[in-house]
Image (cartoon, rainbow, N blue to C red; front, top):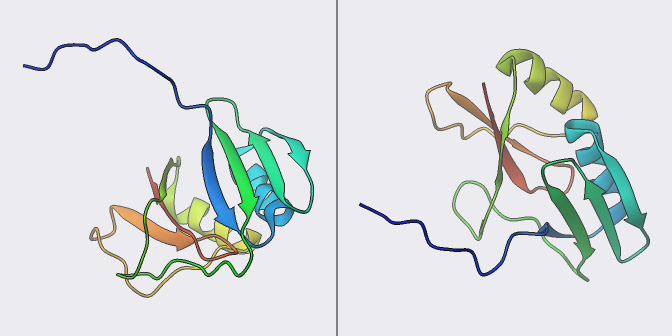
Length: 121
C-alpha cells in the first residue's frame, strides 16, 4: 500500500518548446478555452483553468517524431464526443497521423507544430 506523501511543490505550468509561441498558444486556447495572459516573440502563457500551458520559442525547433522518435511527453485531453472533437480539432489546424494505437478508444493528433496529443471520451 502506498502512503500519502506531503508535496514539496506543485506544478505551475506545463512548458512546450516550439517555434511560434503566440500561434501555438492561440491553438490551445481554441481547444481548451481560457485566456492568454502573456504573449511575445519568445513566449506565451495560457491560463486554461485547471492547467497553465507555457509555450517557449526554441531556435531551430523540430517537432517530435510519431511514432517512435524523440517524443518525450504529450497531453491527454478528455472530450465529450470523439468523432466531433476530432473534426473540430482538425479544422483548427491539428493533423491526424496515420499510426493510431488504441483500437479506436482514443485518437492521436498533432498540434500545428507537430506535438502529439491524445483525445479520449
